[in-house]
Image 1 (tube, rainbow, N blue to C red):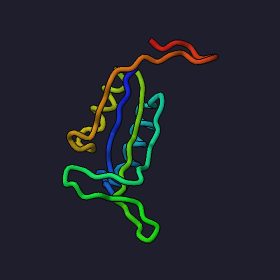
Image 2 (image 1 turned 90 degrees about the vertical axis):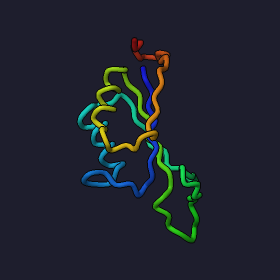
Image 3 (image 1 turned 90 degrees about the horizontal axis):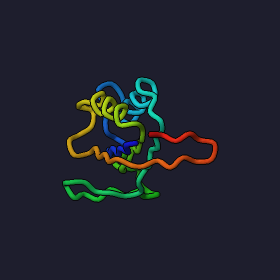
Length: 109
């Protein structure tokens, strides 16, 4: 199995819609990825060093989002190819993992 993390912000835009929505559509509708989780950060900063944090007095659309997904390496390769220029360079990480079978689950090779 391979895990991928994609880093973006809530306000990021894709080609036609919000970037998160476009990526989720690719992962779910086009590639039927095995598992996807989206994490919303409460604070973060990028290469410019500007700190963005949630604040009860201010709505902040620049909070970080992390999309984490996992699937077989061939599926992940096709997903990364499909994401094309949607994900900024350096904002996508991947690494191989060993998936232990759980109760009632078959082992993934």
